[in-house]
Length: 230
Image 1 (cartoon, helix red, strand yellow):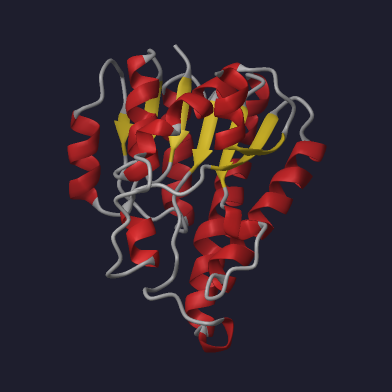
Image 2 (image 1 turned 45 degrees about the vertical axis):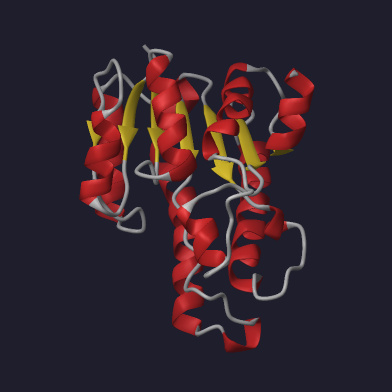
């Protein structure tokens, strides 16, 4: 059975995608920084075998653990770099962004996913695998106070393009999922009602279609994928 590695799988889109892939018969290696929410999310996963590994994706030892777990299941066919951070809430103007916070944003959103991809490349190459890097419209649009997160996601988009050029046997996708009703989105708008945003589950069919398709590597918007498959 195919194997997927999904980071940030305790909440939001990571959790919803993990559940959908498990329902389709995938074995999973899932992680998140906090053990208890990850355990609750993974308890609902169907099928298996699955590997549940709490930890921080910026930790090289944890990344090695994820790669080893995937190899033990037969090797990764899919990597979903979903773990992310805004930095702090409310989001500050670029001039007020603490350098240490900015460094952490870049480590989580750019350095760690690309380092994890590198650790899994031998497995992914053997299987003509897929890499999905979760992006954002903030990577392409200039929103006030989104400079730290947006510039990190823009860097991830470009790193995805370079990886695709270097690894022609793979499909490397940067995907903008759109606004969703998630804890992180709420952190971006503290005190506001985000009840009008769609649930993360609504984005999952577009991602599943992308994984199963022969679309070329590139940057995609989930909304466009959903329209194309409607």
